[in-house]
Every structure is written in structure tokens, then in C-alpha cells.
Length: 202
Image (cartoon, rainbow, N blue to C red; front, side, top):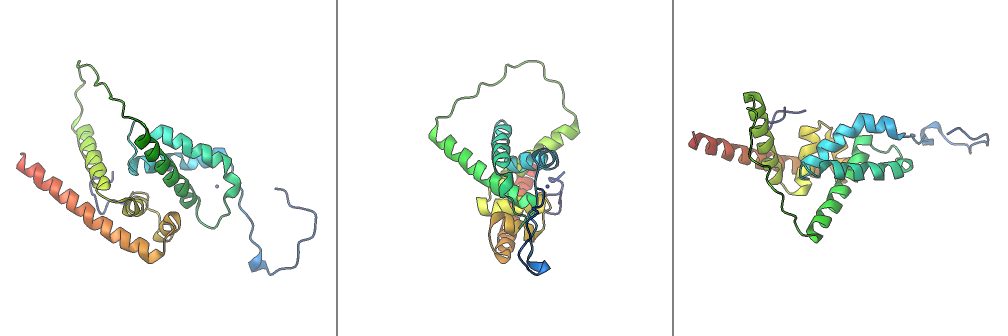
């Protein structure tokens, strides 16, 4: 995970017997075959992380991720190998997240009851630091619009190449770079403001 910006915040058929038409070797594209279980094992954590970082609450991440993999299971045959598997998966993630947001707008919010006050085990300083860093990361990501958030998450946090990122978000490479630059500047502003606020509270 790339940590340069938010440091220390950023702690994959039988062939036919019929003869193929004559073609140059460069024109022959072999369509890759994805199988569900290996794909899930390799990319399950990526989907969970990305759903969360696209703004889905922690309590709803698993439900949205499950919807992602239901779509993946139905559409494995549609992957043509023109981009990476991660880029293909992200296209499904972004649609699932958008659907989730629309559904939330259509239904009333249900109040969540606070857990009863009881004996709370003391957390270690490391756990508290991680919780604070996670909260600051969420705040920084929430300050970005979706187009910039997607690029920032995929490049800075998931360490995908910018070519992969541009393919995943379906935009020209230069546009992806522009979004990344803007996202970095906004994230720096949020982190700096939080840092100043923390010092005032000391």
C-alpha cells in the first residue's frame, strides 16, 4: 500500500476441431477463462477494501461486496482480457456502490441503538492510533468527489498503475493524472487541517 501521501495513514474450453480461418498470429486473441473460486481467493480482500474506501459504511461493506461477487459469478464469461482483472472488478464495484447509494436514498434511515454502557476493555495505544488514522483516512476520502476518489484509492492505496487506473475508471490517461493531482492536493489540505486541530486541542 502506497504511503507517500497519507503517511502514516496508509498502514484469473477445449479447442474446436474445426479449422480456424487463416490469420496472422498477432490477430489471434485467446480469451482468458476466469473461474470463481480462485478469483475470489485472490481478489476478495481487494473488493472489500475498495467498497469501504468508496464510502460504504463498515456495517454494510460485506452486503455490498456480496452483491459484487454475485454479479462477478454471473458475468465471468464477459471478461475478455482487455484490461487487468482488478480493473474489470472495479467496474463492478463502482456500479454496486452506486446502486447501494440509490437504495439508501429511497429508504428511510433506521436509527441505530447505541450499545449499552458496560465494562470496556482498554485499547492499546497502537489500536487507538490505527483507529484515529482510519478515521482521518475516511474523512480525507469523503472530501473527494467520486471521480477523484476512485483514482486516489486505486493508485495511492491499491498501488495499481495509472494505465490500470485509467482503464478501471474508463477515462483517458491524462485525465486520470489530473484527477490524481487534484485528489492529492485536497487530501493534503484535510490532513493538514486535522493536524492543526489536533495541536490546538493538546
